Picture: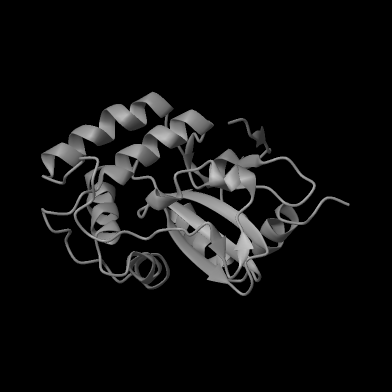
Length: 204
């Protein structure tokens, strides 16, 4: 899958070499006793092929959406994919801006690249009874998630890191988007709600 790369402010996102993401995070997952097997043991958020009766665009259906969190704000007329770390300050600022968007579906892939605590928090959020709500509570209100149970499979975190490497996501936050008439594009770094709206505007 190929995405156009949009220019962005490298000072507004955390950068880490993609291979280093996998090599540094997988041992943490294992050392923390969190499962990385292929089959989850607890319910996970699932993106349906349709949202409110509207089919997902082809570029989005190519992504492993079962490994992401999902929220719809208004009508699902636009789609934005976000790669985010729970301890990334730029990601937290981005979340504030994302909440100002309307008529958009946001698909968040947890990408813990900032060390052991990021892995713990990502696992706890992913394994919570309501992962999207747990994510928003932490990112927007600073309410820490409960510790992940040992029985919970967090293999999605490892797969998300591999996906980020495949797509060329160099750090967090990373953004993938495509509006009607536009090719899918990859951008790095936090952006204002206005800039995000411009990214998601249809081609003239």
